Structure formats: structure tokens, C-alpha cells
Image 1 (cartoon, rainbow, N blue to C red):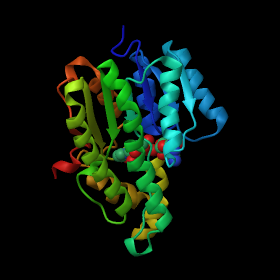
Image 2 (cartoon, helix red, strand yellow):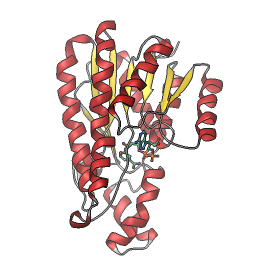
Image 3 (cartoon, rainbow, N blue to C red):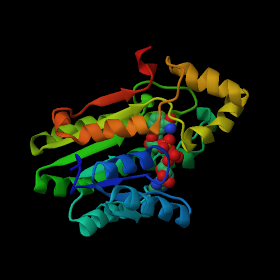
Length: 262
Ligand code: NAD
């Protein structure tokens, strides 16, 4: 029996990167999985079927767009309808955009606030009633080192991630007596498509080469001089789902190679 046998985990933005690692780690721990996120249908189906084959659990995909509140509620309802409950909710979908504030496109600000912050409000709002009814739940939000400190040219992302940290604390207090915990995980730089994609814009914004961005901007922030791995982030999330973590709530857990200690 795994930590999560018989339970259901909904993980937003789980077709790629950290989210996919959460999904696979939670499936390994026994949970049925609601995947969510964008991508080519054949790639998503490959990941979905792979989870079922590798871990002997069930997995479905919700195409909910995290900018659409009604679709987010439908995603939670899909988990409840398909598997009978949503016991673990991981808010993880996120995008990035890098630009000086005076040129920051308004639509990018709005999209980042919607996907990286407001979607977590909508999904938590939809999932908490069922968790309260069953008297158990785990809410895990992927924040970032940028929920604690800032970097230039990331105004929307830093604002959204500081918001996620505040939302996490508020929800933790509201559900504390219901055996529901709410925490956020704050990774430093993890090598995923999200990090890879921001390199060209950072090269432009700072007038640097790719190697300079990797070594002087990204890994410069991280005292260990190494990227965090998606598996390390996922293992922390699985730990938060266990009984040993039942008194960890409202916490912002850094996994950042020492970045925010500096
Ligand atoms: P990624 O680009 O690999 O994955 C992002 C996921 O979000 C994908 O599945 C994508 O389809 C999904 N997504 C994007 N827009 C969506 C929308 N409108 N609706 C539904 N799904 C949508 O990125 P990642 O690096 O794995 O990032 C995951 C989370 O981790 C993000 O919240 C990010 O801010 C956070 N984070 C990442 C790092 C890092 O270094 N990679 C560090 C700290 C925090």
C-alpha cells in the first residue's frame, strides 16, 4: 500500500516539467490521477497511458484552461465524478514572461496573474467542500523562490508567486481543523521547458549569451551551482501527503539550493 492508495490527486499543469513529475510520483504512491495541461493530444495520451501502465492506477486528462474559472471547476468535478473524490490538489500550472516593466505587455501580465495565481483560488474553492466533507485533504501549491525574493524583469511572475504564498497561508488557517493541510513548495531553478524557454528573452533583456544566462543569471542565484531536479520537488510533495506531514501547514518550503538563504 502506498501513501496515497485509494486517493485521487488533481495536478494542474501536469503535461510537462514539474507537474508531470508530481503526477508520476503520486501515481507511484498509489493515487489515481487527473492530469491537466496543454500539449499535443498524442503526447498527453502517451503520458496518461504510461502512468496507468507503470503504476497500476487510473489516470484521466482534463483539458481545463487555467484562465477559465468554469473549466477549473469542471476539472475538480471530473476527478470527483470519475474517482469519487479529490483528496490531493496540486496547483502547479504556470507560465513566465521576462521584460522590463515599462514594456511589459498588459495581456502577459493578465495571463500570468490568471494562470499562476487566480487558477489556484478557483481550484481550491472548488475542491475544499469535498475535502471538508470527507475530513481529509492535501493542497500543495507550486510557488517559487520568487515567492520570497524578486528578480528584475519578472514583475508579473514575482507578484503572482508572492500572491500564492499569501493564499497558501490563508487557506491553511481556514481549513486547519478539518485535517486538510495547505502548503507551498518554492523551488529555485529546475531544468524544465519553462526555464529553457525564458533563456532567449533573458539574453535579449540583459544582452547576454546563452551560457552567460545559464551561469551568470540562473545558477548565479543558486549557491549549490546546480539545478534542482523535478524528482526532488515531487518527492517533497509526496512527503507532504503523508501522515508524518499532518502538522505541516501554511508553510512555504524552499527547495532552492540555498538561493533564498543568501
Ligand atoms: P512547464 O512549462 O514545463 O510546465 C507548465 C505546465 O503548465 C504545462 O503542463 C502547461 O501545459 C501548463 N499550462 C500552461 N498554461 C496553462 C493553462 N492556461 N491552462 C492549463 N495548463 C497550462 O513549467 P515548469 O517549470 O514545470 O513549471 C511548473 C510550475 O513550477 C510553475 O508554476 C512554475 O512557476 C513553477 N516553478 C518552476 C521553476 C523552474 O525553475 N522550472 C522554479 C520555481 C517554480
